[in-house]
Amino acid sequence: MKMPNAIEQELIAVCGLNCLACSAYLNNKTPCPGCSAPNEKHKRKSCVNCSKKKCAHEMGLQWCFECDSFPCSKIKSINKRYTTKYNINLIENGQKAKESMNAFLTEQKEKLACNICSGVIDQHKKECSECGAQFSNIV
Image (cartoon, rainbow, N blue to C red; front, side):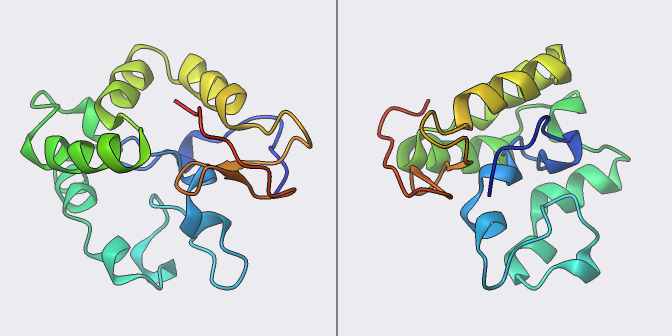
């Protein structure tokens, strides 16, 4: 997938993950519609049963960072796994998005665009979805 001109804010998951650069979203065989899509469009049980998504929606929020309790224990738990395994700090993402969603989306686009072919770098696999180039230093 080529990096679009702009990342839509609907592609930012409730927890702060960028769905555009997620392995599930980039999967050509059974692509995910993005975490913000209605549950009936999801094939993955983990997306339908997401406790962060359910909590935010019950509170009338689009993203966890809009909550007065951010970062709560649910976000801290997933953040620990994502910072350790993928070097993605969801709390930092939420803080940046809360400060300025447009600036956050621009930063995400710059960080996750392949400098070789302008493809989207899969933030889980650390490889370009277009040319397969490997990237070890994505932060």
